[in-house]
Image 1 (tube, rainbow, N blue to C red):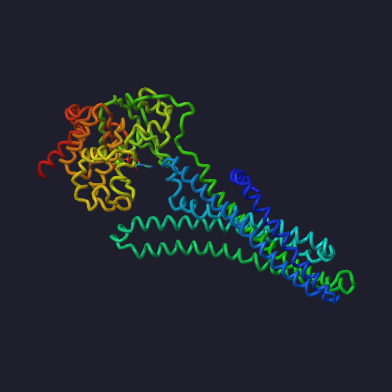
Image 2 (image 1 turned 90 degrees about the vertical axis):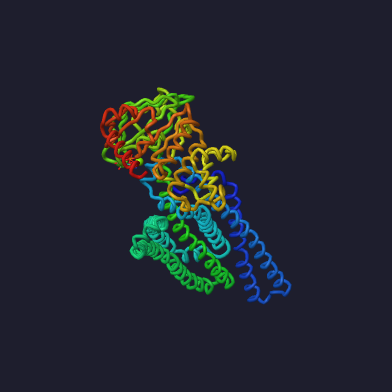
Length: 580
Ligand code: ATP
Ligand code: MG
């Protein structure tokens, strides 16, 4: 049973809880066999006219006492078992989240957010359900049925028992067939649920764009198609579900009719008493629940297995970039060098960077410019170790980057991405994202350096202002400066700014750059930009085109060279002059 092997770790740690629950369930099943026997005996006594009043009240009291005892036992095993199932869900969600945080962008390109959310919610719920409700139904089937059958044989008559249970094998065959169907249809339903998540996410986050293009009705119609898909898949699951119970009732009906016919015959033959026949019929009734349980068990197990398949598939995916077995120690990034670096995105056909070479000593500033789509962001991202890289192409302090622990490299780099990622928290928490322990003074300094202080001063709650989902409350330029302040607070060895000044005016830009030059003296900086004034002070400038370096040098050298850089510079200066 693959479900058990997969969750071995869990069953192992919780074996005591499971044992207690199973033990109590067994005890309840055993206790349940007593009342029918007592009722049968009483009836036989009535028939033989030797039932005393005190005996009757004693029996009645015992029945009530038994019912109370079972009430307590059932309560305990239910809470124990369901405690296990919610605990399993919690543990799995934690593991899943930890897994996601280890994954690189390639993983998230392959797996959509909606599908991942479906795994974290619905699928893990189904797995937890199997570990709780599923185990209960299994134990009920095995224990309940064997206790009843043994009691039937020992207290009544084995021939009657055999005759009444003739239809059971048929039940097993049909249920296992239905179980396979459930699994396939449940997989389809979970998949459809994931797609619906994706659509909902996209519609909500893109609501402003949808509205401005008056696409609400189209989107609603599209969403309607998706939800109809989910409904249809779930209906297909419930169609199969609905077959389990009636099937069991049918089989039980057949059993009853065999039991009563053959049982009456045995009573007439004086092989069993009337009381025994009645007890037998109560026992037969008690078999209904284990049988229903069996159907439920197969049903829940198949769903749990289907979901476990899905979750496991995700767990099996490894990050694209893996840590070296024995990382080399590098204390500080004394230099950063690319040697003929060529890089292709995992999903792309052509390289986005070709034969890039440069060396940047610690404390230097590298400017990266070029047309849109030329590979500037791609080059900067190589420092973050998000994508797999061919060996011996990127060196830090002369050591190939693949030989250095990934965490170590990432800690060196403070990255200001081109598209801003803000959390729906206060401005302060957003700035202190990488350093929650930062003192107010440090934060204020970072804010000052990023020229963000005047903006905060006019915010309704200053630093405590909540920026809304992905910073909806802030202007483009404010988001950029918040992101810069966040990176500056890290005071990291390497600052990587990807087009981070595009939404601020020229004067603010030069003020921020000046602050950075002053405060970060001795540390390394990467800047990509479309506005060349942002890199004119850089120690070295690369001009990219279609992933290749087409010009490189200092500002003066490039101006002298008179290529793309020169033309672009002249044009931008002229435009700036016109604006003034
Ligand atoms: P911009 O100035 O517009 O920011 P850029 O110079 O930063 O452009 P990049 O983002 O580095 O350009 O993109 C370089 C090339 O790589 C483009 O052709 C782009 O389509 C491709 N590319 C970027 N990101 C990915 C990705 N995740 N998967 C596949 N291809 C990508
Ligand atoms: Mg870019």
